[in-house]
Image (cartoon, rainbow, N blue to C red; front, side, top):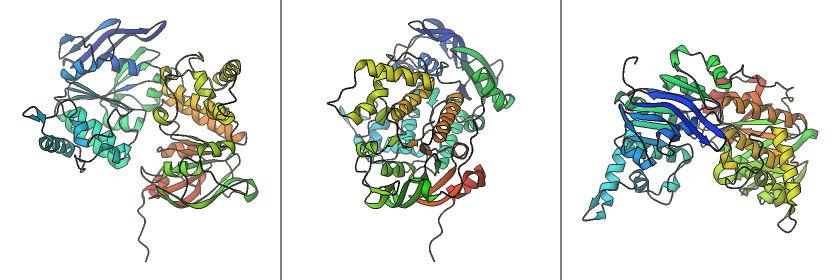
Length: 504
């Protein structure tokens, strides 16, 4: 593409927030008919750059051009009118409206001044068909899985006359088949001349679908590279600015759990999404949980932590039967849960780092026993230092933090109540390579100190790296539990994806 004119070009862009320089003289370009990846650690400036080319913010300095003409967008709507559409990691749809209404929101076909619902459903159905989605456009969006909602968001973005499509972590909630279907659509759009910005922390996906990579670090441009000419290890080192710290290996637990060391024992657990589940989790053990999307990973976590009360089954903690009828009961017994959805079930974005860290401890004490402000600040400062949360300003709103640092705040909140069992659902989703390794190392350190950990992840390599044993789920059932040392990614994938044979 050398010699071709970029479709989108941002030149010498600088964006500051107070004393913080988020982008420092960055150049960025995209060509028609290419898939371009934007890579960097959390806090490198990726989100700010995306906002600068999609009208969310205006750079303090720099020039943005589209098809060779200088443009200045005052809003995302202006950018969309010019042909730039964005799908963010956090799905921004209305679950109470129909699928068709979400796809064509603000652009509904009308007849005699009123919305033509029949035409809207037909038009939305045609757009969805391009994504291979055989769902009823008239159905409420909220009844569908998060993965399907993600694809509907992409359908909405491509339903306009799109020239540039920005996909921010579009595959974070998709299973392998859905990723393959999305990549089919991306390749089709590429063949039509659309420029696609693909932002993902999954390196395998970046190398499978992207033609070119731009790397940012600390708000500055490191470089632009052809994917075929940049080795993965070199990409990671360019992102980090150093050689990547390896995962800190730890001594594995025995593959067979000693009954005297079991902290939690569950038998016959049945709940929406999970059926007749048995598992044992020892003190100081990390139990990885692997399964395809919809296999019951999150349902299992919620049933074991009081979020969803099982309809059948027995849970024992240190051989004593317990009734985990609510998260607060579970908390009182040392069982805590970190949801995969930090935004809606975890952090409170407008509250400070200190307030977020103190939330679980305050819930444990009760509303009438308020923790003194000085104690809250002392608690927060100690965990910010212990987990290396950046920035270290405990008064900063947690929404201002990168994904990796937000996840550390979640861990600090849960560790502040001195738990015995920590259930982590996708704790490294959407965070960069460096932060991911830090979280994995923290999990290992916690287990070495006697904490039991259930670690759920869609990344099989991560499950094997972190877990002492792996529980494999298919169709809402735990079909096997095996020692991590006895598995590799291929054998684990075979177990995860193997269809269950009908009983004779």
